[in-house]
Length: 295
Image 1 (tube, rainbow, N blue to C red):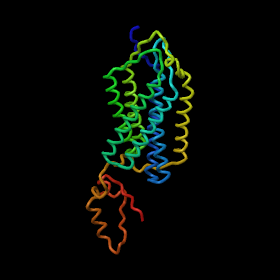
Image 2: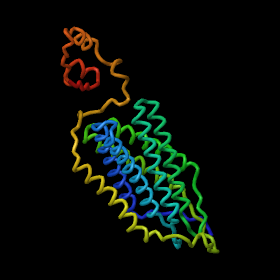
Image 3: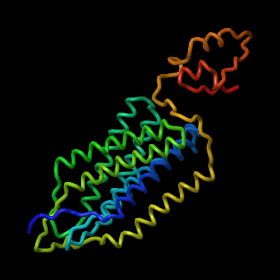
Image 4: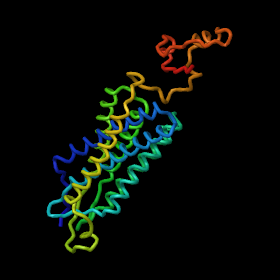
């Protein structure tokens, strides 16, 4: 039988993109609270929530995209064990990436965390694909796979930079839309190279698993529970934006960027009296950092 191209149901790309946007934006909001709480118990809890909502939404995006795939006259089933494992890999790789970036906070940490998260998401996607059971042989194009990996790496890097540097809510919304677009493009770039060759004899493996439509309510319940739970906790724990711009997480240490004029003013203080340094001091703002001086 000749190869058949996989087709995509029209509604699912929109749903996949929407869940990715929500997850990335909520992850940014959780990271904002992590910055406010610092490295405390509640701070680490917000970091874990960010990893859960970002990793969970990317996995949800992938599952929605997969459930929207179809091949004429073929029934695609899903191995529930491997599907659940793919979710754990997606969230776990996001946890590791955010921990590396939150503790390192430099360009090396960004490169390391981005690489780890990209590899983890590739593993999660491959695991989810391995969970597909169908009476057909699936082939994939090498060129579409390479393009998908490049787009995925770009989307992951942009997501990490967004969640840990942007403090403006408007910029965060725009960034979430762009990051989700890159991640969804990576997903469908991989699908564009898929072909299926139907086999005449149905194996036990191909007939095992859960049909796609039977997963709809389960996936909807998981994603809605995740989004609503995080949204409720964000609502009851408000935080104030530090600045309407970009927080220089990847900037050099404060001693390297503090203007000499501010240092001179501090050194001129007598009798160990504190010298007030305003967050809106012209020299401090010119240095690109905001200093918080505790009394």
